[in-house]
Length: 427
Image (cartoon, rainbow, N blue to C red):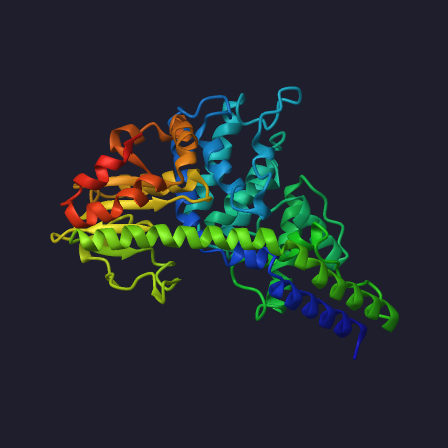
C-alpha cells in the first residue's frame, strides 16, 4: 500500500470515529432536527437585509439592524457558528467592517447577497465573491461565507478560525484567515475531500465543515503527516483515548437530549389539544417521525397539508412550523412555534415568513410557545427594528406553565380559539 493510501485510510478511520462520537458536531448539530428548519428563516432574513440596503433604509449602525438579527440567528446554531457575529460587529477604533459608514460599500455588500441569493451555479457564486474582493472593503472578508452557506449549503462551506485550522491540520495546507482568495482555495480543497469521503459525509458541506471544526478545536487530532508504523500506532492510540475521554461529555449531551424530549412533549400537548377542539393538526415535516409515548409524534395528524396551503408562496416554511391547527375550510387557524432552548430569532423569523408569504394565518393566531422564564427574552427580541411588523400580526406568547395547567380544561370545555387565546399574552 502506498503512503498516500495509508494516510487516506487514517482519514477514513478518523471520520468514522467522528461520526460515532456523541459529542461531535455531526451528532449535536448536523443531525439536529432544528438545523434544517433554520435555513428558510435565515434566507428570509438575508432577503430583508438586501431589501433594506436597496431601499436605503438599512442605516449606518450594526446594533439593532436586520443584519444583526440574522447574524445573531446564525451564531446561535450551536457550537460550529459560535462567534459568527464577531466579524460583523462594529469596531470603532479600526472603523471596520466598512459597510456601515460607507454607503457605496454597503450597497456592494447588498449586491453580493442579492447575487448569491439569485444565482444557482458554482461559477456564479465565485464570480460574486471575486467581484466584492476586488473592492477590498476593509474588514469584510470570508466570514460572509457563513451567510452564503445558508443560501447554498452544497456549494459554500462555512468559515471560521477552527475550520481553517482543521483544514490545515488534515491537509497540510497553510490557508490564512481574512482573505477571500484563501477561502476559495480552502473551498476547493474541501470539495475534493468531500468527494473522496462522500459515503461518510454529505452533499451538504455543513458535515465536512463540522468535521474540520472538531479537528480545529482539538477535539480530534489529524492523522500524522508521516506514515511510519510507530506514528500510525501512536495516533490510533491517541484516538482511542479521545473516545474514552468523550464519556465526560455524557452529562451535557444528556441535557441536550432532554431538551429535545421536552420540545416534543410540548408539541404533543398542542397536537392533542388541537385534535380535541376539532381541528386537523399538522406536525412539522421533520418532526413527524419522532417517537412519543409509544407512537410517533404525528399519530392522528394529517399527512398532507391542504392544497391551498401546499400551493402558497411560503409552503416550504409552513411545512416546518412546529404545529398547525387547520379548520374545516382548510385554513391555518393557529400556528405554534415551540422554542424550548432554540434561537428566539429563528422562531420569530419563521413566523414572519409564514405571515408575510401568505394570508393563510388571517383566521387565527400566531403563537411563540416557550418556557415561562423566556418571556422577557422574547419581548426584548421583538423590540428589534427587524421585527417591527410583529405588532401588526398579533403574535402571542404562550408559556409552558399556562399551557400545562389549562390544556385539559380547554380540551374538555373549550371551543374554537377562545381558550388558547385566553392563556396567551399579546406581544
